[in-house]
Amino acid sequence: LRADMSQLTYLHGERAMPVSVSIGIGRSGAGGDTIAHVIAAAEYACKRAKELGRNRVEISHADNAFAVTHRNDALAYAGLQSALKANRFGLEIQSIHRLDGQLDVLGHEVLMRMREGDDLIGPGKFLAAAERYHLMPALDRWVIAAALRSLNAAGGPLLDEGWISLNVSAQSFRSDSFRSALIEQLAASSLPLEALCIELRETSAAHHMREAEALIH
Image (cartoon, rainbow, N blue to C red):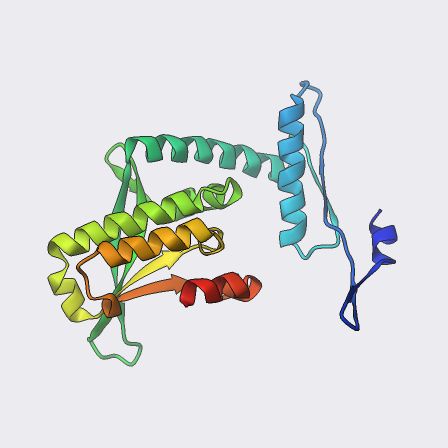
């Protein structure tokens, strides 16, 4: 199938663009996996095929790293859904400093944490699952709303030190409804808008330039 696809070309104006295919295969184990589990494993394997360079085949089965990661993501997804319903998130502020040895604080970045008991869990434990299961817009909305509330209430000293940076994921800035909600939240805030920085990952913006430009405008 990959070989057949490689013989195709896509015409974009006068330019011929090569065609390739990324394939994910879910292999059922001896334990009798459900069809839903096998399809989910195939979906994850396809995502890995794209991440590893595209135009390749990846296989996910019960005893390989893909399946383990998929199960971990599924557990993290369940935890995220529960945390969203129970509002078990928090924010941390990280200061941004100069690199030339000066002690000046140029601004601050708002970082999301998930509460598990008395602990705050960093995004490394749940961000991959949030991206895989398309929960990033919900998380970004929560962060922006919570950050604006906190800054409206007691953000004076932070704002005096520089800008406040809020991260927005590609899943979010590609959504018209998210962009509209962001504008409404900023308009309703009493904060000086020039003190806020909406931060986009360069790679995400480069892959979705039209949507990134729409958000920027």
